[in-house]
Length: 87
Image (cartoon, rainbow, N blue to C red; front, side, top):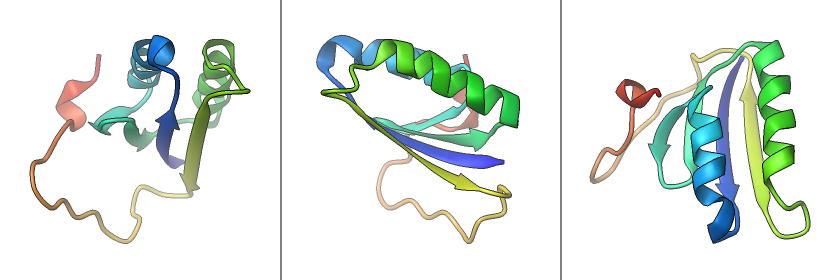
């Protein structure tokens, strides 16, 4: 499946969340990642994020698609991140 993950977390947890997400996904720009992920890794990512975030303060939104062949992606301005930034 293909996912787009967006997060808004406390300053103390930003780096931990970004680092964890980058092990599975491609960083697109501040607080936004995307990528193809297996069902097993998706479950693993969610479990690992649940251990990092504070569910009373933080938010992680995940958009799921059946295929990476979603409509289209357009960037206006500076292109940040990309597939070459996988850790």
